[in-house]
Amino acid sequence: MIRAAAKNHKDVVILASKNQYGQLETILDAKNGSTDLNDRFLFAGQAFNITSHYDTAICRWFAGDNVNGFKHSINSSQTLRYGENPHQAGTFYGNLDAMFDKLNGKELSYNNLLDVDAAVSLIDEFTETTFAILKHNNACGIATASSVKDAYLKALSSDPISAFGGVLITNSKIDKVTAEELHKLFFEVLIAPEYDTDALALLKEKKNRILLLRKPVSFAKKQFKTLLNGVIEQDRDIQTETETDFKTVTKRVPTDSEKKAMIFANKLVKHTKSNAIIFATENQMISSGVGQTSRVDALKQAIEKARAFGFTLEDSVMASDAFFPFPDCVEIANLAGIKAVIQPGGSVKDQESIDYCNSHNMTMVCTGFRHFKH
Image 1: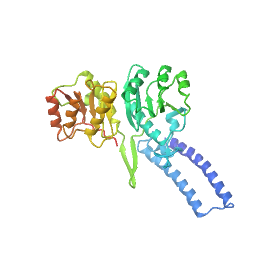
Image 2: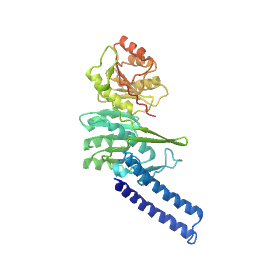
Image 3: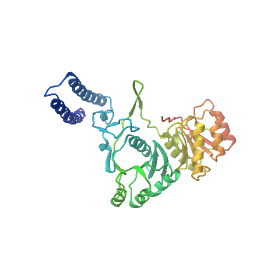
Image 4: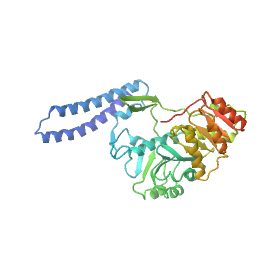
């Protein structure tokens, strides 16, 4: 394994050396075959950057994270068109070729990559045929069905307005009939594990449309983010609740259909920006409230979106990424037609929410796991 790390490092050294030769030649030409102290500082810094990554890769291997960990730091980098906005420079450090074959379209942007990351994390929660549409790292539609075409159409129906310019992903092969539906929509990126030849030919008619063929790659167990004058690290959130994690806290227990819908909705709320509320059936997201400063606002947003696209909430469940600090959320949900709720629990006022549910024939399940996503 150490040899493998060394081989990867050697490849990067060769690549870096080629780049440095070009830099050095330019400097020598401009300075009549000599270098100054600033030039030597530049090349010395690049050299130590490479060797430090090499040592880090070996360190991570001994720490047990040899599959990914910091492996990205010794792979090649890719300059992006720009960062989040055109006035910001951007670079991706990693090996996209190990994860995707790009079959069509322009280069991925900074924002594309953020959405692709969110899309891959979300779709990996599902084994059945599933299709998801994402905007700004949140799902605006996701559904499971017996065919990928039906899953797409159901996902699209949740919010066809937000789907415009989105990032699309499925865990199933894209066939011709699905491609014909997709071709009607303007989207930035489509990710799938396989494409039929005729489907790919149709989708390639839009030259800027990014089509990615996903390859099986595992992810690091750690996540990092720069902030202030340092970096924070955390474990990746790999917790996905099942029925064995459910604790029914109300007199009425959920039906089998409600339990399936709770499992589906809880997977979605885990991958939705906090504060988050999800309404869903057992195979379709109805609507969502995302990234709000209060849970009540997230709930009201989700209700309004469901109504705007003609959905009734009577047969759906509500999922929350964190506990309800007050009973107002279950009151508002009940008035909108919700009769089944899943949430982590843990509020000092949980009993008030439970009491309201009991007095209005609602069922509530607590999981014990919060899923903040910032």
